[in-house]
Amino acid sequence: MSRYYVAVDGQQWGPFGPDELRSQGLATNSLVWAEGMANWQEARLVPELAVALRQIAVPTPALPAPVPSAVEARPAYATPPQAPPPAHAPLQPVYPPVGMYPNPYPPQQINIYHVPVCLPPKSVAVAFLLTFFFGPFGMFYSTVTGGIVMLCVSFVAVFLTAGLSVLVTWPACIIWGCVAASNYNARLTAR
Image (cartoon, rainbow, N blue to C red; front, side, top):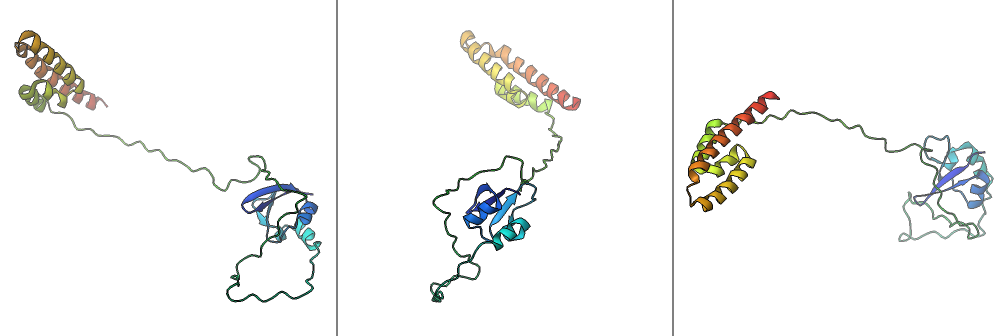
């Protein structure tokens, strides 16, 4: 005899045996699942529960039900309201252990592509012109770190030497900028 889980209002309840489900008022369209089943199924489609559902006594009404008016009429696809479970046996959601039923969302395959990045080379002539006219500011084209270093050195040296340090720092910026552009191009071709 299998133990079944029942889906009621989006929550899983159980596990219950067929007799317990019958005493709880199992409906024929209730979704059930047990270990060994591939997916959730309606109770009427499970042979063991179909027998239990036939044994449920259906009370016959003493008077015919009144015909609903057009305002109260429900669409044909609406399901009748379910009676709440008996008060003496409150149901608590119980979830089966992980891995007992199939995952409806299988893991996705991730494709990783390696795309080569092509960087343009830096022109040594442009580096020369920028550092010749703009000094340490022109170095930012070929080397940002060198530009920051020479900007700080030039700024301090100008105040300490009353501007004469420009005769030393300006040519140093030109040389450093051209060498940095050349080294950058060598690293690109080495890849």
